[in-house]
Length: 300
Ligand code: PAF
Image 1 (cartoon, protein in one colour):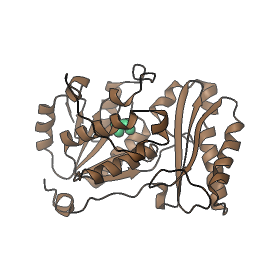
Image 2 (spheres, rainbow, N blue to C red):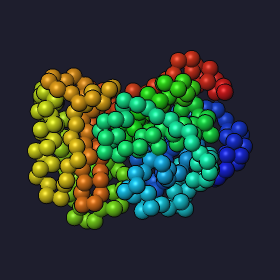
Image 3 (cartoon, rainbow, N blue to C red):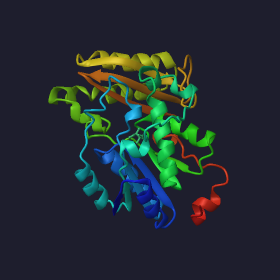
């Protein structure tokens, strides 16, 4: 496994990789969720590249950039064990050299849900992912359903900018008690960790209501609020039942829906979601038009 830092090193390492190349962008401090993306990439491609970069531009001024957990040595050990070919660990100077002033913005999809509470967050995500894509130039890229809005926004970006990259969204990986895996779970003390299970319990309650025939969007939101209200440590930021494509809040009867929520447990902000009415509960893979030669013969 080669570990590279600069763009020069990356391009040399990338040129030597057999096609197709699968890519998993991460911010490090890897857990089973990340490793499931790596395994998915490994199963579908001849080579796998992982990036580790805590992207400063997707953190707000009051967010946890400084304290975001980091452990590069452990991450590299885990990736080596998964048989990853190249790990790219750019520095902020590599990604945003002095004088940097170019941004990628997806408009409507980023104004709601996470975007409403984290202004600028998605601009940072779409910009860095574009730059990572241009560096790695993969055939396929892998993202988790856990960050549903991020997945939806990146699917839109790849379509709108004609990136010749297939986007694959993989299921959320959960702890045995249902808590969605996240690097931020390490911020929780034992009491908060127990309380944090309320997010998935709320989603499950709404999903059970949907499975039992409830189709009213407000009733599904209400079911989530009822469960969350039972947990004294939970401070709800939003509860949503939205159209999975537009991410606009739904009213009245729903067929497909993205149920999502953001909840503070103590000082830790957690998000989770379930996607109703989609096979496997994930956004479908997006293959840009005209990708046959790239994907089947590894060209380009
Ligand atoms: O999901 C993440 O870890 C990050 O948002 C990503 C996609 C690596 C961009 O920094």
